[in-house]
Image (cartoon, rainbow, N blue to C red; front, side, top):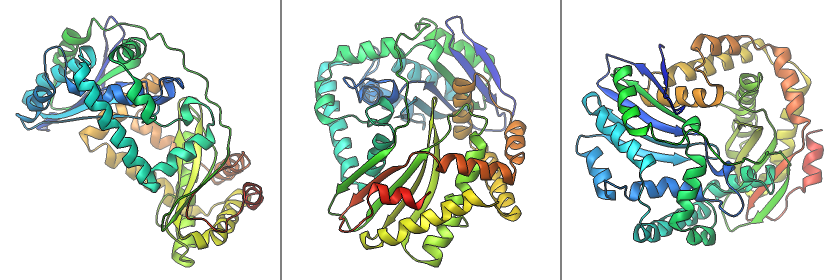
Length: 419
């Protein structure tokens, strides 16, 4: 994959991969800011900004933003995560300049009109309520809060209803002034395009963006702990967590291999032992979330409340096994093949590729060659996996439980299953 990079005078990076055979272009603006960059006082503002920029700019109404893209058959959307905010579009190759103009307009000139903000705050409040109504969603917020107690990384991306309703247009302008700066932004595009023309388009519209951010991000420290919440649900939701690794770590791909072996697929140990052999759960899987300063390794299960006391000891046994003995050669080989195939298949999509190269440029200040990633995956040994498991599962436990609970093990009891 040939990637072109140009850095504008203000520090904004324009990165692209040309695919002349394609009829379309996927493009967007990736910003290294999100709920982890907020304070307790403005929690939820990153996500509200993401919503509000679509409600009108200095030269487009909310309807015009939608119509300009959809009139030519294009698509546009956005999302906010804990550490990134993204505005993106997919267009036919001849409409790339229109897409650049709309995306730049969202970031450079949102109007934040009082009337629109009053309405949109209620839309976000409905989104908060919808998330709360879905126990399979809200349990992950509780889990994150348990793992990073009292810190920005542990707070909800959506924020709280009363806080959202309290924000004023100037609050959003102040947030963007502090966080939306060129050094924090990558404009990424993949498809049938010319890089030099793309650079000119972006420069014409975004060269006046301030160069430097002026916010101070608090250090995020994994704490662990316990959170139990009674809720009238048919299923119980159980999350077990341990400290992971950050996205800069040399162990980044190693911990992904550990997670995939343990619970990352239908052939994984947890799925086979807990669902296939014992029938204790409908859903069980493990995952590794790597943040900019730290990471979180988790194991999720959705199951009948009556099965919790059976389920947790089995998870403990599987953790002890993977922490105490080498994985099998065929197991390691299969998981490496899964990860490499997932990587290569994702790069067939222009949208996924635009995401990958933007994130890598923001995090590593370079795009990692596919050959380098494959080499890192292939270099992992059975001994590496064993040591990684011992490192992860010796860390402090995060225990989150949500459902109509009667009998369940307390925090100290669960801890003992993993030691």
